Image (cartoon, rainbow, N blue to C red; front, top):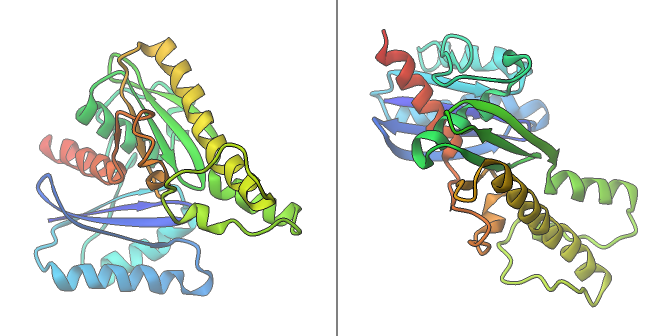
Length: 259
């Protein structure tokens, strides 16, 4: 049984796999002050208690400060050394990025999973702290993409720079039934700007990506805020919230199939 771990800037996701099947997944905050190492330990210990057959741990991390805690918890509590994407776990697709080592492990996992699950070329919108677009070329290579501020960063900037504006935090938590384009109050205007602005941004970028890659190119959404776009089915070929975890699994499987 494989434990896949995606350590993001804001959130850490765990996925327990039996072969290709994802048995369960969970998430907790990566940055939670002095308690985050305890959060790692508690989550890993819970996984180990439920699944005694754990045999491997694969990690994609963009948070270098998490490495020490990861190693300690995995080796001391789970009795297994973690393997890291891009290090002991090589990427099974070509990486045309400058320099290749600077490509985020989560982005590479997205590219691997997208190419296997949806074909190539493909583009993945990963909605997290930042919104990243990860592009797989027609030959299956990761070729980069786009990085832009995410919804949470935009909301945080508004709160920091314009504290007199009303709170619209629920737009980050609930799947909107409909957010009117023209807001009738300051709060509604903010909701429209955040949500409809994000939708329009995706529409425009997806159109340009398909102009460049081909009109049949799959556009896939993933990440912690991808649920906000579930009612926008016309934007995406699929909303695959566990795509990164599957990519970590695929990278681990490709590495170990050759050993």
